[in-house]
Length: 268
Length: 268
Image (tube, rainbow over all chains, first blue to last red):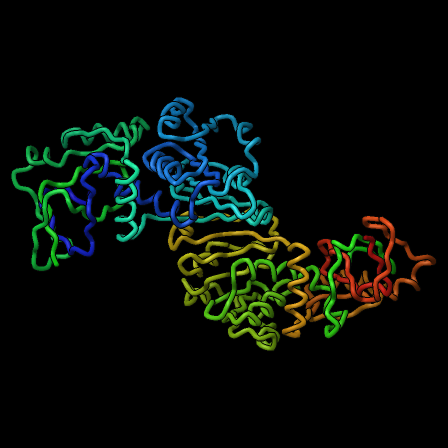
């Protein structure tokens, strides 16, 4: 995450501990898609008895399903791709609604306490705000190109909220990883080699990824004569055991994560 | 409120007690504009240390200022009418910003915990969402004709919320009246006679009202040969002392309230 290199030097304040019982490839996207969904799910206090909808079952959405299910909510996936129904149920979702037909949403009006919107495609947000119960919140996580046309009346009716959430901080990142260790949650990934990146990019654009590509960073060495050493916040270096630290991820626009490099250094 | 008549019969569950120390003319709009602002101010827990902005100083907005000030918040009025500055300060507002020049908003970016939007005119809601701090909420109370064009990025940046609120319930109405009695809060009104209604309507449309017209219901008798008796939820009638009960108000589209009729009956 954050750079195509084998060695990193970072301040330990920006490092997190990866639980030993989780596979590194499935963990890599947790530092991006994972925390991006975990943070709003925690902030809006998802718990048993709550009804949560996840809009879109992609790299972000599938993490939302796993976390909301693990926190005991009744989870509904609202997806434009009916072919993803089996995946959604396998991830623990209780219901799957195809949004290809807008009429399918009508029986869900005033149903949800929280809706997590991971869809970046254009849509009528009022159709989804209407699915919120009294005091319900629709959290925008994806970034659509155009602004949402929000009818004030839809918000007034039931004191609904349209909110946004973006990534999470380091303490919450560690909390998420510990939660994942306890509940055996990782991202669904397809591990690729460095030379496959361009192909993976094309497949990501074509929506052909379940649900995150992860690059095996060891395969970079074959492509490079020397690996770059990145000193993010370079102070006196202190070596940590392999695979106990990960750099804070930057947003991965192409939904590709990296398995952590074999050697990580943190400065103190 | 609710009907141009001298006598009402209502179920006592829908009646509230008007505190003895408040003037009836100033109380009348509390049952509409008052509760409409009191409810979101209570829901979003306005208290000392919070910075609250009120967009628009009209029938709704001036109640928002009075309540937020009474609850100890630092209150800023954002108004298109610079001429209202003196009124805003007299009502207890700590700051007044003219929004005629959009640049005046720039120093206020990330300033407020809560913004109460009572403006029904068209505006760029993102300019105001940007004024919210982390986890801040902009509550829509007015009803604009066109939908708001909301940029998702504005919501993501600081986990902001755009919410709506509409009126309040009977228990909260009583709570508001008791709060008003304690803090000596009433609406700023201009009392008119029944025959002035058409003129008052014109002046309301022309934004020439400070800040609610109130009709003296006793003046209807001169206009009518017999007063209509309305049985809202008519059961066996039980007479209550004059001025202890008020019907639940319906929305007053023309910002005109009525002093309660001289005789009110409630059914049990």
